[in-house]
Every structure is written in C-alpha cells, then in structure tokens.
Amino acid sequence: MFMGTYYNSIDAKNRLIVPSKHRDQLAGKCVLTKGLDTCLYIYSMGDWEKQMEKIAELPESDPKIRAFIRHFCANAVECEFDKQGRIVIPQVLKDYAHIDKELVTMGAMKKIEVWSKEVWETPDNEGKMDSAEYAESLERYNF
Image (cartoon, rainbow, N blue to C red; front, side, top):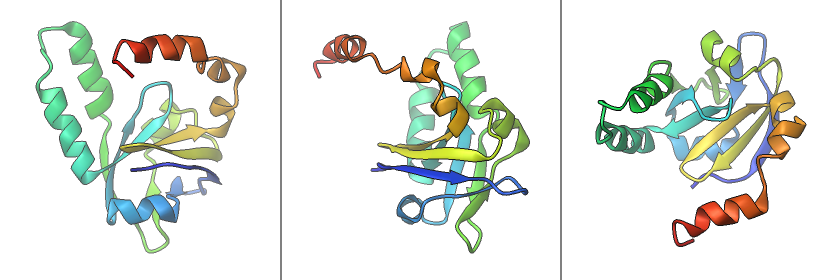
C-alpha cells in the first residue's frame, strides 16, 4: 500500500528518484504510464498485471474503452531502478504531465502518482477535492 507525499525533482537526464519508502515496495522494477488528471502512475509489476486483467474484461466494442486502453497502455514503460533508486521518465510522459523540474510524488493506495508541482498546486486542481461531491460519489459505492 502506497501512501505519503514527497516533494522532489527530476534531473537533466529526466531521472526521478522514487522515494525509498515506495521503492522498497516495488522490488527494483515498475511500470510507469499516463494517469488520469494529468499525472503519471507508477505500478508495481504485480499491481500492473492486476490492472491489465481488469482492463482485459472491458468491452472493446465501446469507443471510450478503446480510448482508455490506448491512453493507459500505449505509453506504458517498464522501468528498472538504477543504483541511486532512479527511473527515467520518457519525454512523451514528461510532456503529458507538464513536468519541468519540481515534482510531487504521492502514494495512492495501489499506485504512486507523480505530478508536476505546478499542476498539483494550481487552483483548478485544488477545486477537484469538493468534499460534498466526493461524499456523494462514495455513497454510491456504499462507502
């Protein structure tokens, strides 16, 4: 289970140091992909496989499902950590998440989210956390 928030940055070679607390759970290898909400997701190999199994069950006859599969899978990359605990963020993923230098890396249960600090701190992003709206959505799932 990933949790916690860390402020870090990427270097000139687009390498991200994954926080050691998270790195220990990833066992030296992970999958990095486009997330939703203009961030990147990092999955352990096991959780990535579980996600792929769930996605395989979705009806590809639905154009929105096909678009989601392309978004999620087409730019996914398998990453191995170097000796300093870094992974390389490919340029296409860096561009998608508007990553320049400063990052916010946070645990989000079964995955890690990587945000551009600028994007994370925008007023629009803060507005996404409307308590009443979330409570209503969660209620539909008996939460």
